[in-house]
Image (cartoon, rainbow over all chains, first blue to last red; front, top):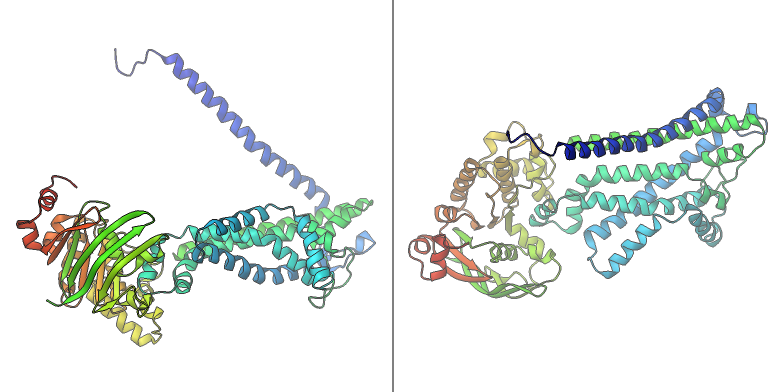
Length: 291
Length: 251
């Protein structure tokens, strides 16, 4: 008998059958996610595409659906990101550098680490309550653009810290050794050797965190980012609104026309998030090529 | 030959593990000293003590003295940055920075405050020439260091270490990740460099120690078993354990 003739072919065909069935199951599991997303997109497109016009960008919110637009909300979202981005970048990356590069690995830092990971999972409405106490009342910043941006900064800070830490940790130790062995101080090593290698990961984390902040509603509802703002904020202490809040406001009105406006707003928001995620990918690729 | 490094009764602990036991050793200047011994015998640990790279490992405790030209490197008089500038190091794996060839070499001088473009150009050329890499890379200094072969990368790392003008060069199994031809080139380079630098190398390869070094130190379980002229140690060892090791009976 040839060594390739197995007496137990039946057992093999049974193994193959299990393999085949699971293969189908895994495809189904993937398909459900994709189909749900597609259904959502189609549903929103059907409702919203007709309202997607230049007026959406140039008109302020209005009681009359045909005159209503997202201008103040779009500008509010942009302003918020512009305030948030530098603050959260400096604080988040700074904390990550401390934890990864400077701090000793002891019980205390492990406790901090656990705290940060937990904070990343705290419901956003809780941050809203914190912000209401701390910024709006405590520091007397009022229901302003600044308060809202600071709350959002707190919200995304743990995400940025954790993702930056991962990026820093991925830098091989030999690269730090090489720098130290040349007589570099810790900061010189971080700035000259570690951060350049970790930057793509750090930036990706920051952008993804910012895009999460753009889509967040709950904490800003708490601080009362006004839902009817028919003007652009003239300073950081001015009141403001952002896109998801305007969408929330429209969707809770009874008229069909406002629902369509909301759908158009959602399309815009999704497009914005898509662009930001795409930017994150581009940035990562660009830096990786330079390595 | 003048003594450059004088190690006196050095004990080193990683937590409770006693990694170096009462090591006393003198290393002469402008010569090649090789550390040999089986894995885990403490030879790399001692090498990393000479530029205080062990400082960064939590739980390391050291007593005893390591004097370089008469100054204890663990005393307050010595800044670790200055020490590492004077005691360069080349690692087992070539570890260039993800930067251009030029910026890799200029990294060290820049750390120590040299900003002048012309001065940096000079240092880069001089260091690459010393590492016998200049002719191969002079036209692509802007290219990524990762575009070089493993052996070239290691010579780049040597050039990078030389760029801060050290007196001592530590080589921690610097050829173990390289092919035989690249290894040979580095060995030739070491022969050239010993006229100007004091070289201390850790190697797993006894033939390499025999080929390249002037003095050889044999370590076992954190202790110095034998230390003598390389020829003497390989042809006529005084300790039975040394003989067992170099004849391949263990290790």
